[in-house]
Amino acid sequence: MIVLGIETSCDETCSAVLEYSENQQCNILSNTVHSQISEHTEYGGVVPEIAARSHINSIDLVIQKSIRDANINFSSLDAIAVTSGPGLKGGLLVGVTFAKTMASILKKPLLGINHLEGHALTIRITEKIKFPYLLLLVTGGHTQLLIVKGVGHYERLGTTIDDALGEAYDKIAKSLNLGYPGGPIIEKLAEGNDGSTVSLPRPLHNSKEMNFSFSGLKTAVKREIDSSLPLNDKSLSNICAAFQASVIDILKNKLQMAVDYFKEKYSEDINVVLAGGVASNKTIFAAISELSLRKNFNVYVAPKELCTDNAAMIAWAGIERINSGNHDPERVNIRTRWPLDENAVKVRGAGVKA
Ligand code: KG4
Ligand code: ZN
Image 1 (tube, helix red, strand yellow):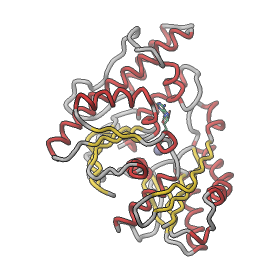
Image 2: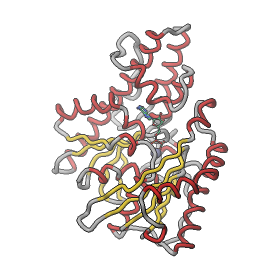
Image 3: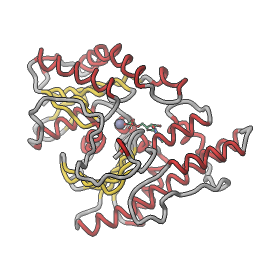
Image 4: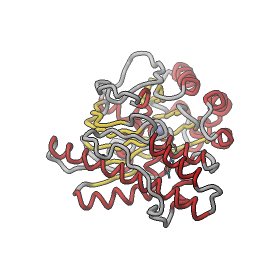
């Protein structure tokens, strides 16, 4: 089975071709990402209008490149999978409209994919991980702990009640005039520094719930920046490292609670998967790996290019949907808000991030 994936929900125009063979091996034949970062950098975040226009300008070339790189023809495709939500309306409209047109001209089945499900299932491209597993989903728009019970079956244990973690990285980077996206820049500046020279809060640390809050931490960092002006290399590194140390404590604290909950519910091996752009952070992964040795769980993360937004994860979610017989034959329509766990109790403040 050969599936084309298309992803345009945020600031990268992506297209990928995946081949799934009878022996259940998946080959990524191509994975094209056209990043719009340079168009958004001066604003310190994604500007929806600019993103939508940029998707329109490049989507045809990006898809053509992914077909060429995969060394196939459009007629070899068995299905087209496109992100239909959640995300920015303009970008989603570009991707879904393009995919619908292609599917109707080529007479191929079309699957509308939840972007978050793409992140959630990506690890199964490269690792033979069975359901259920525990997922820490950390992106620019979401921060959640979930149990992945199967394709389309998710139990949300916790979510952010304000900023998403990637968003906090980006906003702090913006306050420091470091550019966008902030995550990789802050990680680099924090390297080799344990962050102990600056004291920052660990919001919700004593809460029994598995929810996250990063807004107060972000404000505390901004206060620290203001009181340390003018910054030099050392104070900049100290602030970035202290922020990241606080983030790591928060993630470890809630992840431990989730592991305990999972352990009580299921008897199988505990597999923890980190996914989303922030999961490509090596310092965070190292800290969670260290925790996994003490708490007796396995921890997995996909290669960096499959953590940050890409279309291979969308094509893969399409393959998973086809294999499980769990795909919606109805018309593909965009959903800007689309939680993985539709039954999860609404959390005050979380908004579309729930
Ligand atoms: O998953 P993703 O590519 O897009 C969304 O679905 O939102 O995540 C993007 C987010 C950005 O906020 C970016 O700053 C963050 O992931 N990010 C990182 C790192 N690389 C990307 N955050 C922390 N450390 C990193 N190395
Ligand atoms: Zn994403």
